[in-house]
View 1 (cartoon, one colour):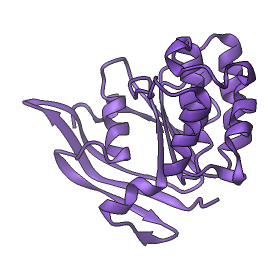
View 2: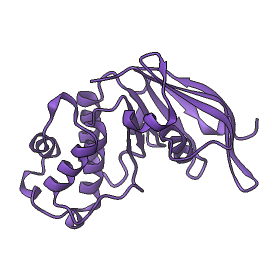
View 3: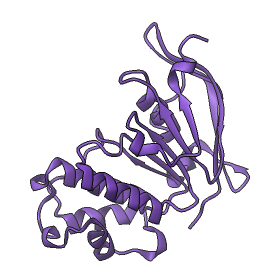
Length: 211
């Protein structure tokens, strides 16, 4: 499992129309560490995560991605990233087994995990042939998390990972991170302390609002 991913922000700013969401973010996310991005709802946490994922470009500054000490070309960054967020949709026509197998075609799983293994990690053996559209919101969130965290990617991005999860689901999430995140670079955007209290470093988006 490849791990040595590093991301550097060089005075990164993002604005929508005339409003700056954040400015002058100069920060390096170091390989093997766990980070939490904090801030009130609507403050720009998800926007920052989307820039990390390459889904958005900064309005100012630049982002450098490096893998095993070598700078990555922009077109290659996505190969190293796994991303989970409540707003990312699943293909609901697929059964659980089909959804996992489809994902695996694009992103293999760590440790040679199979679709059957992931269904076991989820505890969804009885639902393996059920279409995803019939899943509860909590089941869908668990599926998004297991697909993301168990993918063989060196940068894991999790936006509000325990959205729609009950207390049991939150414990399951923490156990999933403990067992499968390993020493990969992990970045979590959340205001829920249980989502990120195991992280090494926190980054508050409010610190970059008026700079």
